[in-house]
Length: 407
Image 1: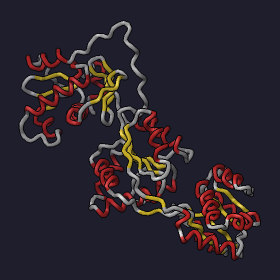
Image 2: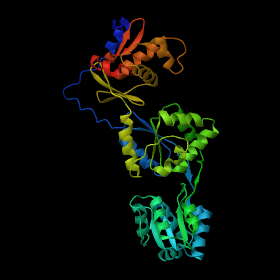
Image 3: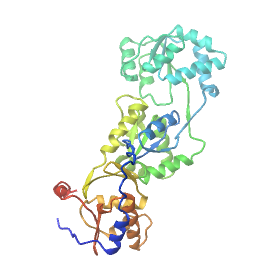
């Protein structure tokens, strides 16, 4: 490919000289370690344990934008739970399936508040108890009860297979619901002859303040987020519903399909997204820690390092790593850098760069101003070369010419 290697203009040379980094003194402290998510922005839709998830992400360097897509109805105020509990006290179940630890604990606590705690525990002791996983088993045992079995996979599908194999015809089964859809689970038990009583330990409702959700949607559609996390299916469904109400569902789906990584804590959580053909990423273990670990692997893996002017350049969501050092870059500078990185080593005309600047108008001087600020932010002026009367180019190292020639 042909490139023009003319010298930079006097103005650009002055700007480059002004941005030369200071030489570190011998006793200067070593730079702080950069977290694996430094430079990335992650959206959090969770209503419950959102602070914990946000803390895990920030500890790894991410910027976090939180907007709870739903709110949880307090258990003690939920008439549906009280009604279901009284039904089970009046007519004992043969089998009880506990699906979440927080839900099971909340059910017992709510019953205590109604003066029904001892009666509920007595009923549960007389029934077979199945737990969805080890955390639920812990909640059952903390209540002084003992579970009969739980699946190693933590999957309700395995619970269903076991019950159908045993036979449930004529059994009265209580299923602790947890706000997420249980596709086919209750229907399959009923089709096999069981009487199923749903126990809604908590219910989801839209947030009282919809403003943060709208801002999260706007940021997702604008590609200001690098990833969007979901820890419940209702949150995913609620976000899609809000986008539909605002007339921007197609834009949201396009962003999640192509640019913003949708990370779900598990396959049930992912169902509303996958119903819109949105591919999701999920950890092997359905926990917050593994979800964060998934992001620390996948987000940096989506960035292609560039060898530029003897440096290693990584363009992340809102910042740039230059030889492993995090450099904050203003939005206009990031827009220019991304335009240059789409064809590394090739000259990009000022007119094309101008079009990449949000709200820049028609004055190409805006490109020069934004470029000067970008070079200052990068702290390495030689990364971007000025090509007189033509535009700018990333100074891709010659050895990389073949590798990136067809990018």
